[in-house]
Length: 492
Ligand SMILES: CC1(C)CN=C(N2CCN(c3ncnc4sc(C(F)(F)C(F)(F)F)cc34)CC2)S1
Image 1 (cartoon, protein in one colour):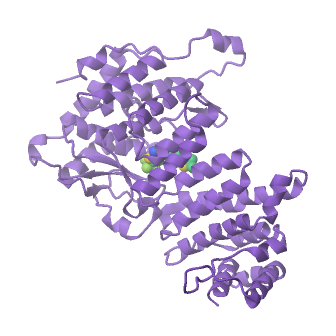
Image 2 (cartoon, protein in one colour):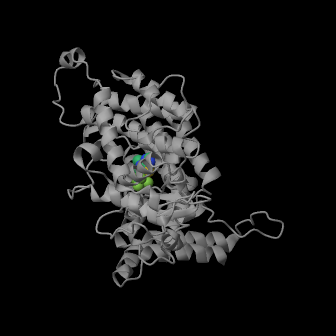
């Protein structure tokens, strides 16, 4: 039967944020499953109007006078929905797939239907994540293809096919107990797509990209949360659409209130970022939302997600709460150390590189220049902060250990030593790299020679870095020697 169900039609034309909220609310409250294709077309249509080819008016009164929210007509949405339905139902002969549960062949076929309709133009532009983009421009990004496969599956009545999300990739789960997996889209640049394959081999590599078997596995409501979270309010590098951001924020609160962000740390992170930009009185502050994302990752994903800590760390850094930001980054590093670095993990490599080579050096520079602010200055005399920076680097060393691809190079060591050298030597002598516990479990007191050896090591750190850097020229990596020394000290 062509077209989407009547109850949704009464909301049209959509003329403002609240009419969109009411449509989503009714879709989420049932009795039927939310219609992924309908909601993706609607949100994509609004995003497209609010962010693409917009004449940016300079004077304020022009903006005040011009109603900016686009009217979304039923005819537009109905035509696009019918186009999608015709394409999907016309391309997949369901009589060939009779099982109660979906087969890998069916999943591959649905992926081929989306895949073969795509134009060849480059796909890492913004606003290519919705079915509106697919149906009006034959363009989708990596997430959009995976989402499109799930929306098409829903149209075909295949309710066992669901979206599975890592922090930088998407695939689908299907089958009797929902544990079969299949690639349905590509990842990154210059990587052959593995569409149709199970992800089992990739998971075995222990790469961050597949989260070691801890991805976000969506139900239909969480698939709505993913399409809302993937919306992109940016007009250009400098400007976001206020209306699109407000709509995304209200939709995320609607999903939050219904519990559909509980197991979706990145959805919570996106909501925290939006609350920082435009706080809702009476809602939890950004920090509390980021904490919920961290707690969700700990509770549901065995603390294998990095982004909850970098969401919070980035926020604290922007608020100049540097001590707490560095602690978050040490916690992020405590997660990445559980993985082996592989070539498709570039996104998270860039994240840690920025923290190590830009954000932490900026902090130690800022606090050593700004001697007036006692609180900030204390950072360089705070053994906990120093310890967190060492933990941050130690996690990255452990990430590299056992990996097929090296992570660290001398640039890392240069930034590491720059940052560590800014700390007062006495502070560096104070840190406890985690002494062995004596028999009754108490941390054993640092006895005299330990202190001496640590002080000596700190001195060595301070004076000998030049040689260590030179050493690295012969391929020996100073960073690892530094931390291996620390670990040797620890075990002696
Ligand atoms: C702390 C940060 C650097 C700030 N933004 C971050 N985002 C922004 C939004 N984002 C996301 N936000 C919601 N859901 C998803 S699903 C997903 C993905 F699985 F990788 C996909 F689908 F392949 F693109 C990505 C992603 C990716 C991570 S991490």
